Length: 252
Ligand code: ZN
Image 1 (cartoon, rainbow, N blue to C red):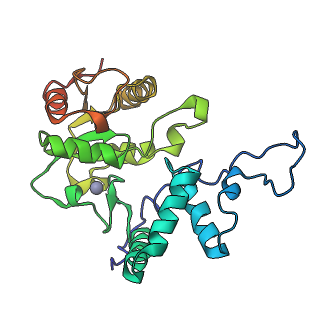
Image 2: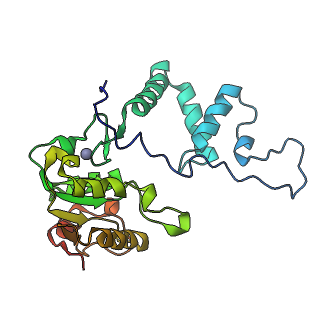
């Protein structure tokens, strides 16, 4: 259990995917319906199973990377397991949703008010690396070359998807820079490292941030281009990431 800390939490909760709410594409009444055919292709797989099994198959097939056949296989596997296995899974899901949130300062994932990195007094809180997602923090931590703290944007600017700076944690980052009390340990930030993915959108986001930070009394650097263009931090190996951190340079 984590007590709610005084002061306004910057993030009300885990930011959810914009697409999470969108439903499966319907089929707008072209082909005549065969008897028993369903609008939702996922339903076809659940036919003939008792309702609770069908429901689980449908829930699982809504997960990324899980097609209807995999969902069916998983559901039947779980059905065959001892009760403890399935209940353990459902308890883990409930516990995760109940306790995991975004860190009050950096928006990394945590089950407390502050994430473990913000909490760690040995980290250099005057250096903040801006990354897109919590999984980028994990990848960089695995590389082990970085001793500063982070700021997780929870996405990147993607005009084609209608994602702008206001959908990210940009305002909180600017506040951390403007007022040191908003940074971990009340430390003034002297360097912002732009650690966005080397993609078109990552680059666009980095340029936007560099522009916003112009005039702030802070050094703005970006990771070296040891990272291949179009790749992601998550997929980079330790050596490449360590090089990228060591070779960071001024953001012109
Ligand atoms: Zn944090």
